[in-house]
Length: 475
Image: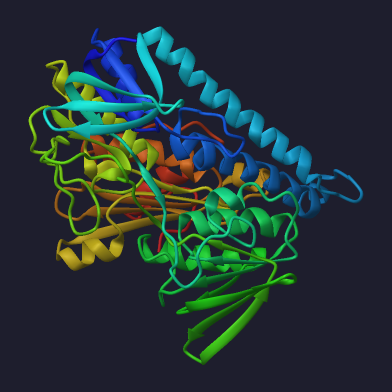
């Protein structure tokens, strides 16, 4: 193994491995170090996203949605399936297979790009050197012209209710249940909590979601949050806002949680608890003494707009730096840094990073919410179109939700797009592209959308902003 590289990336998740691949494509000599270890003891690249987050959760969301549709929607289509049963073992086997194929694919991508994959622990040392500790515990000092820190994040743990891996678990543990819990509590009504809660509710679990905040999905547009809460309750999620968990007592029969809400002290007895209150940057063992890399008060590595740490030729990307903890944000930062190192022009537009919640209906948005635009004082207009009026959505039996556009009154620039409904995560891409080019609602109005498609909802929302929608009464 070589000890000298142009670029060493510490972290092989969705920010690190794309950075390594792009650096390799730029004809640089690259090594990518990652220490992810699966529960069976095997090492794998891909970080939380591929191994225990984005990919496995979407696999289970898809499986559980099919169960729900078979139980509640197929009959409307004239499809009779009889009693629907759930084989969790087969479902989990499929999930594991998808994860394995995804992580093994990274090895092939590394080979194609000429990247050296090193499995073990990487630590940045003074002078841009890296200490690599292999799986066998042997240490070796590597040198690089540039080092990219991409160590990712880890689940936040409640001090009053630490993880035990069995009854009280993090998001990874919730993806690997070998049976459907009869009673499940999800602590946290954020993206992860809602997705996991939806999975196990659709598979038959009684799910209670405890959220400490008094507002539901505060990061989303207010109209979207209101609509989402209605549909989650319809699914059967018991969402309790303003519920602050103070502790839990475990026994052979389950977990008894203690929490307080507007009514005072409460208790809740369940079989399992999933704690999904967020994630924190992971920097354990990442920095040696005297590196000069600074950590802020929230635990993030300090960087500028270009992800420079302030230490010459040391960069940091992904969940370990400021900004939303999203795989696609980390990927674009990693690619940007690899191109900047190669002397190319590159940047990330942080104003057009989309967010998606892969529930049913899906929720997606980009840009500013109506509340944010209103607070800014800028005059604005709003256009909204319900999927109930979409021919394609009706044909799909997926009429929940709407598409909403917020635009400036003065120059018609699109400031934010918010979608709750079928395939929202796919539909938002058009909005991201439009905003990347500073498009106006008129630009979308004059863009021909195929009929019948779900994307027409975005088109009609743009028309509705000027009260000229075709397929829905203009109010």
